[in-house]
Amino acid sequence: MPQRDLNFRVQKWPVAGVFRISRSALTEIITLIVEISENGQTGRGECRPYARYDETPESVVAEIQSIRTDIENGISVQELQSLMPAGAARNALDCALWDLKSRQTKKPVWDLLDCPQPDARETAFTLSVDTPEKMAKAALAAAGYPLLKAKMSDWSGITAVEKIIDARPDAQIIVDANEAFDQSDMARLLKHLNKPQIVLIEQPVPAGNENFSENLIAHAPPICADESIHSVNDLDRLWDAGYRAVNIKLDKTGGLTEAHSLIKTAKTKGFVIMAGCMVASSLAMAPMIMLESYADFIDLDGPLLLSDDIEHGLKYEGALVHPPQRNLWGY
Image 1 (cartoon, rainbow, N blue to C red):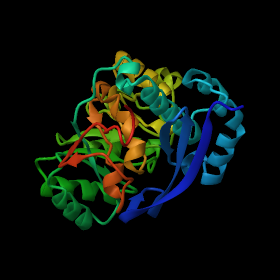
Image 2 (tube, rainbow, N blue to C red):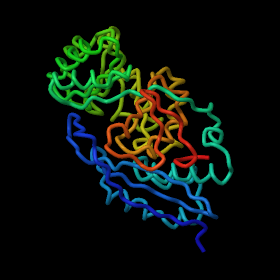
Image 3 (cartoon, rainbow, N blue to C red):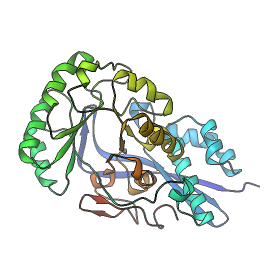
Image 4 (cartoon, one colour):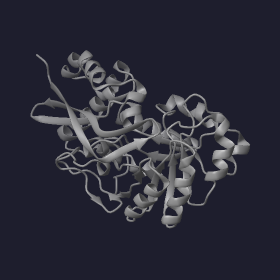
């Protein structure tokens, strides 16, 4: 007889307006919520199937179904790592197993991971791609957020960033291009973005095509890998390529287990750390908050970009995002 019961459902979340980046414009986000129950306790996890990594809700469901027997027969989070590749499917299962273990042992996840107890942190707030004037207006509307993430899709983004700085000279800015530029654009791009308010330049070129010279990176904000970073195995290559920061997301690492290893290793190697997210509900954000003490920047604004959130969602107090309560995730 199976020891556990595995259930999941596809969930649709309406976006507050339109979420635009260099390659897409979305009015709805689709996630998958996983529940693993055992002896009266239930652990939950949420993932966001992401087309950039050739994932669909259907493909993620198929991946989960392929190891249903293993899950229901009681595999551990450690065994899960070798059964599935990094990605959304493993993330949802991994986080659900950590939640389940936390509830069964009556110990918080941060304690099980031997991490410092998480505290409330200021999160970045994302400004979607739009006209420079509208992005500046959005920056003013986000006056309660000291750290803004400005999305770019082309060279008009330079003007948008300049207008955001004019509108919010008090704010620090992460510029996120989501692979919109070419390697040949880098000198010009960094020249325009070498401003005191800009603290990171995130994934300016496509993953695998990066090679930033020492001369380029010496006098510019740190270049941050996003689409290029998935596991510990990527770190040496990215450092050699010129990246000096990494955006760690659970849907890329395949869950909290690998994210914990990756964030600690990246910190040791000297990378600036951003704890990031896909746009999703508070359930998807909660596990990453366990690792906040290792992060230089927190970018966990996913629920703030939706018009609705999961029941018992995270508490956002201005720019502060608080650790999850038991009725959301963890003990």
